[in-house]
Length: 151
Image (spheres, rainbow, N blue to C red):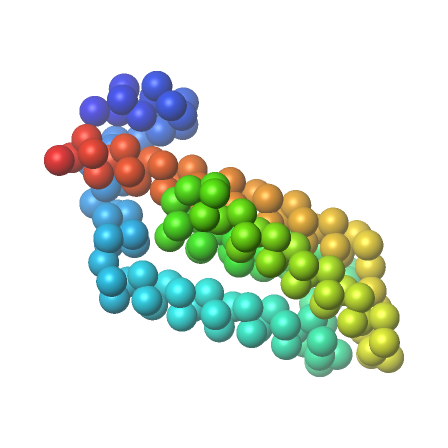
């Protein structure tokens, strides 16, 4: 079974497709699970907006930790829709929206006395969005291969 995924992605060749299918089948197939994931995504968007505009929730800047927080937050924000939508053409507007959100939030920090806008933060948002989208699409593809192989 693993050879079939290896034709597309070499990492998938090292993982048993049956294991992946068992873990990921509920992620994209169940209505309740999809609704929960979309709800978590909406909460995550609200948390990113609140965290970007609130002085009290600013990530610590020591050792570049704030950049890692920006990267991880936007990777998650892009990864969940990528996993659920499963195709670049459906994901593309979501990615553009996240890039716009990151830009608007960084621009808004210019006018907030307690926050500081940073092009490096924006770059981390962009890279996090790209990595999260790619990882989510990869997981969706592996899940589809696993689902097809298990059927």
